[in-house]
Length: 87
Image (cartoon, rainbow, N blue to C red; front, top):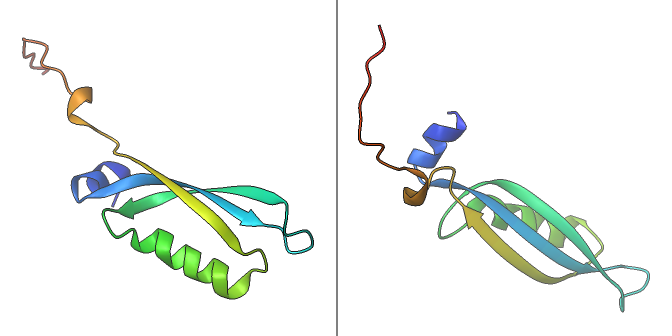
């Protein structure tokens, strides 16, 4: 599916700001930005990535902030009042 079709089927662009502790110096925090198409409200791709992180990477997670935006929102569509036909 292309991005438009994914949007029609409930997929949204999901951005996660992952804050984690550095393994060598746990008092320091580092940020990682993850972005992918995911489905609301359970975020299966993000959850799979976070499970992979916890089981395979050394930096323990501190916090995760998630932002979601659809490709087309109702506010993006406007009626222009006319209809044109092209031959």
